[in-house]
Length: 198
Image 1 (cartoon, one colour):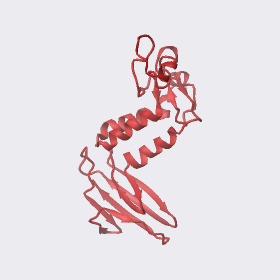
Image 2 (spheres, helix red, strand yellow; image 1 turned 135 degrees about the horizontal axis):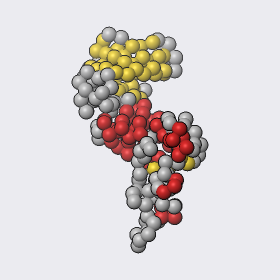
Image 3 (tube, rainbow, N blue to C red; image 1 turned 90 degrees about the vertical axis):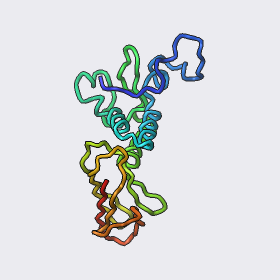
């Protein structure tokens, strides 16, 4: 069975602790000992912000729904669509591994944000593009095609240093190195080639 990221474990069931509404869920459901996907993704983002790239990427891949449904055995347990991020995955007893609330969640947008902004590191703020990735050492390179109005920015990121910190060492736009390692986006219909070296 593919792993899940549990918010609280063991679940609140017996005992004197009263954590609030969480205990009202069955043991292993949602925050009470299951994977509550919003918080799981926030944990991934936190690892990325701490530059713990191996852990951030391990968890990012772990909660990908296809990882929960790529064998017949997993499909029989998961019981929900393999192309939708679930709000939760149950974590106890006969429900272990079953997904829930697949179309009624904001988790998919958080998952997208975690992947694009925090793992691949594409940041756009106030019209300025920068790259601040948190990728595993094993990833050689990756490409991003970013469209800004009528302009296209083709970005190639090369992981030469294979360092946990993923520090940007070179930022080159159309052959010219940019020392500020960021670029003001322009709406002029051009195609820009950006090379980023870690």
